[in-house]
Image (cartoon, rainbow, N blue to C red; front, side):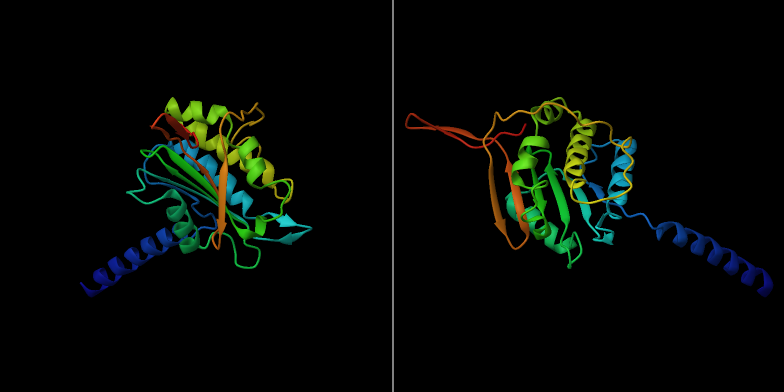
Amino acid sequence: MKKKSLLFVMIVCVLICGTTIKVNADSQNFVDDQANILSINTKENINLALNEFTTATINGEMVKPQYAVLIIDSLEGKTIEKFSKDYFNSKGIGDKKNNLGILIVIAVNDHKYRTQLGKGWNGNSFLNEGTIKEQVYRSDITDDFRAFDYDEAVSSMVNRTLDLAKNTLSWNRNEELLGNSEENYSNDYNYSSSENSGGVFLIFSITILVISGFVYLSIAIY
């Protein structure tokens, strides 16, 4: 009886160890889709692309960049600025030395999204506020969100950001994972940004108020 019990314990240990090895694989999960809007295939492809991104170098030196995607149902009354900043800092996206972190937060029910860059990107001529506005947030992104084509919208946003980053960083990128993002873009919306200890923030939302005959227009996303 004791021998059988010992054998059972050994088998359980082997199974647990085997499972642990798989869980602790080299790849990391950079896509947190809490709203469950992405297909499994899209999440896998984005995650593979973002894992490739972590191997990037500058002049042959590893710089450990990280790009995370967070999709939530609602901000629950919080501003997207504060929510994004707190999440970015709490997760420590991008290593402390180079601070080349990128975070995109999408709040589905609030119809808002926001991109934050770590301070390591400050002064970069390829990936910055202006280039993200012009080359990432194009009019087709709004169309995709309105059509509930979340796979296309999020994949395009990630892919276009990586297109900008590759002008500064070098890594073995599989161009087929997220497809081709060479499309025209639109400037038919206003743009604003803010900066503090968390990094650079890009904000897109829409509000139109008519008060005493005056129209107040802030920014549009979808």
